[in-house]
Length: 501
Length: 129
Image (cartoon, rainbow over all chains, first blue to last red; front, side):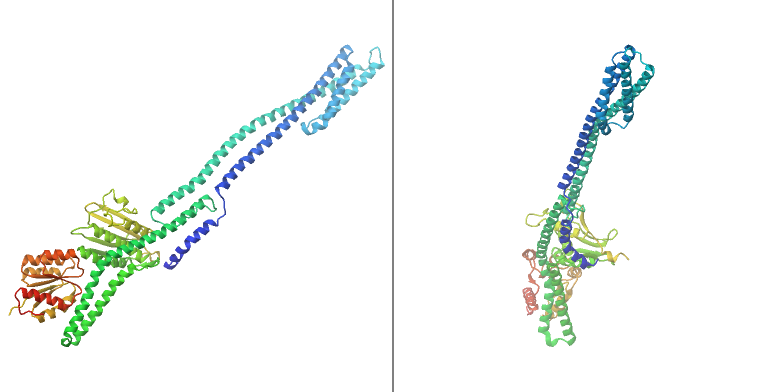
């Protein structure tokens, strides 16, 4: 990426982010909760309707079983009368009526049984019942025809009756037993299903709770981390966590708006802080500027006074001096103006060494007033960093001015520019001043934190500096031993295009 | 006829170059130093009548020069050149016995007048601006 594209990208990022966030499909938590409850509801309906249908079936089954039992009762009754007839010659009429009853029951319910009973040899029962009934009628006929009760082939008929009767009773009893069995199984099912459903519901609820709470907790945790990042001064917009839009998207959009607001405030803070630095600088610059002006004045006066006595070479020397000193003045003014000038944030490839040198020059005037030497040591051949010249100058100037405030008699400020660990350069500003107490050290980058007397410091210098350095994807560290030294280390990534050759 | 011995100290070389001619024309013997350390050595080694020193110089400042001069020879007059005069600095210089102060940028004639006055007071009556 070139510096230009980065700058252009910065402008579009904010609007694009918001658009990106708001254009995602809506899948709100409200909807998710409704969906969850709806699933529960549908499940409950399925189970309830299933139970109702099953209970209805059981009801029918009970009727079926009762009918079969009634049928069985009639047949067994008929067989008892039949036995009586063969033993005592009585009750044949009763046997006939019981059989007719059974036939009626079967005839009436055969169709119904087709739907409700298990498939079985019902036809067989009917056939044998009809045969049984036929034999009884035949027997009855024979009884009527022979008043003396001597029935021819009575044992044959008895055999047939017994065979048919036993078959009917066996089949019907078997059927009844199986119906009973089935009924019992259904009842068991009806009992168990709600229990199973409850267990299932329990696990489903646990899952839903975990799922939903995770859906809530994850973005919450994410936002908490994001606010920490923002608190460190990194104002890059919050990136959405999900592909769709939910309530957290609204929060993210709000945070991003707040970030923009914060950033613009930070920028005006930086600006006002810069102006304050300019005020301090002016004193030093005035002094610095007086030297070349004095030189020009002295030279011009000398020329005026001694014009006729001067050789041509001397005249040229003096005019060259005047031009040289004018140039020097321009340089001093330019350096200050370069720092003061309000400019839009532009990222250029910067030679960190010369930038620090220019900054040191700005501060040197001030340092000279106080008689404090500033030693600059730049490692040669460093790659450029990508950054905003003015803002970086402001940071280094702020750190050097702080160092100037910290040192007393025999103060010494050392500025070093060199390679840091991989892909980073560092600017170290070390002073041998009072140092920073260990309990104060962690707070020095907090906004409005100051150890200077009221009215002297805003407590914003280091906070603003850290904001600027964070924007450059760098960091700023402080190390101090009270009474010995304080080192501020500004670590900046160098321009990726110019990797270390 | 006696000529006053003058030492001119300023880390700006042009100052020495331009002032020297004018002061010599007045009848002074002028020595110029750019490095204040050399200047201090000269002060310790020789008696000057007037020392003119810039106040803001690397490592050694004008106040230190003033102190050394007064230590070596209390009679020597010291004129302080300053780039950025603060009242504090002026008071300190005057308290420590400076003869006068002059702020940059100044006209050579003004400094010459100051030197002539100091020389006259010291008895070099034939020194005129």
